[in-house]
Length: 360
Image (cartoon, rainbow, N blue to C red):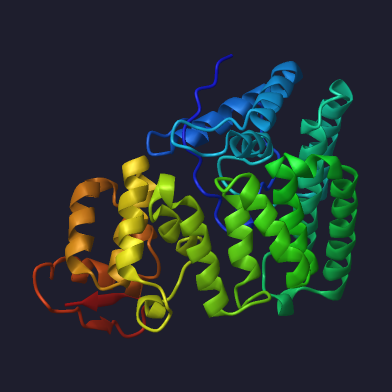
């Protein structure tokens, strides 16, 4: 089986960091709007589900020793582990059960038993343990995590750290090892004196392993251990490290990992001009529908009626504007698009007793 490598989309925030769930033995239905890397991850997924461990081991060896990249410069190893993860992620997100987590661990253990000399399944198991810890904690803010959940979370993360410590010999040459350790560093609240040198070593090894930048941004966000200023600096660092291949694309990607309020472009410290350039650079790499929809949506957030209208025209009946947010936001964007070429902004009114809005 030949796998032609393309670009890997950034994995959005922590909720997308190599999460697993149960899935039948088939890949998701192909979608022409999905980035090529999603299809390549499906190819790895099929190899795993078919228990073609020999080829998985060959791919892992190739990607980890030859620093294989996609034609557009992304880390092939990151696609490999994303493909393994997709074996447990269905076509739609759903809550996983303990039984499903045990089943996935058994599947990965079967690969390890079949390939005792390969580090691929060992890393996959360790990465799975990290996500098993996040599963116990949940994705809410700290105040929403119960004492019992926090205890299980901490225990599982410590177990994951021990697994990565045993694989420490990989640290000199394997980006996936650093990806796991950085996630553990975030979870365990490592001091900056420990976390930041880890990030520096990781990006020196491979600046195009996107999870490094996602986790570093999260670590420096005020929701974790930093501030807005430090988070912005983390984004700028990621863009600087990857600009030779991606221009400003990471500026847009990293700021669309989670929804931001309208103030992000006024008092939130985010530059719409840089983000706009980032979307353009990203679409030049691969013109997929989700990225163009994000481009149009954030143009609305930035009150850029001309760009909003331009992108909606390019999207046509595939804009899917109803998925952009709440009713007020959707009504505002619909109204703003009609004001392209003017300096006007919509005024919105709520219908009494409903959640419906009209903007003119």
